[in-house]
Amino acid sequence: NAGVTQTPKFQVLKTGQSMTLQCAQDMNHNSMYWYRQDPGMGLRLIYYSASEGTTDKGEVPNGYNVSRLNKREFSLRLESAAPSQTSVYFCASSEAGGREKLFFGSGTQLSVL
Amino acid sequence: SQQGEEDPQALSIQEGENATMNCSYKTSINNLQWYRQNSGRGLVHLILIRSNEREKHSGRLRVTLDTSKKSSSLLITASRAADTASYFCATDAQDSSYKLIFGSGTRLLVRP
Image (cartoon, rainbow over all chains, first blue to last red; front, side, top):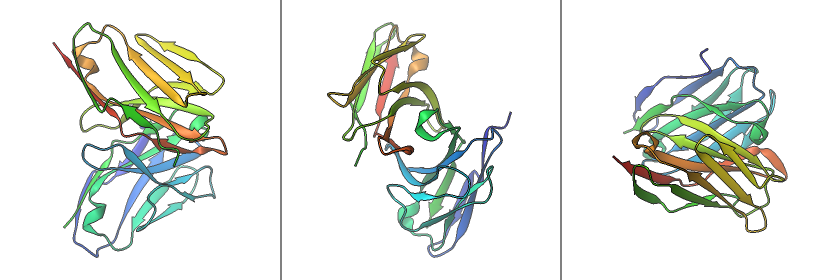
């Protein structure tokens, strides 16, 4: 029972580098999410995918792109990392958006120097 | 913004006491959820309450929803040291149940 799997768990980037955070769920969920959490703060929604084939911007989409590769996988890409993107990134999935509970991955701790 | 705002930001209580956290939001919703986050970990779902419900219980947890005041409360009864965590509410929007926005959270410390 893997649930929601995020890779990598830790990453250090230099300013301007690019990287892709991977997320996969094995629960056949329709909806997937990417959030970021800064120290001592709540979660802020970056992008979400209501269902396979759709993606929408959340609260803080600037500097990020996403791909819903298939029903299982939802990746987050930083094209040119900035220190302001230093954060913990969480992926989550749900059977039906806010109508059902979210299952979270364990997070990716990203530092941009 | 539909963001929920939790109150208080931090709460410190003695083991055995009750803890009450509040969440206020700005726009009409379909569903409201509460989550717990232990330090450095992912979030764990506690309770989901729909806009046509007023109260739900789960073990020592009681959630109320007042849509006229756009607010919800989470009550933890007979708290334990293991309840020490951050608690967040999350709301969708009436025109999109897929866009889930989290509040800033309440940090609860339960002293043994």
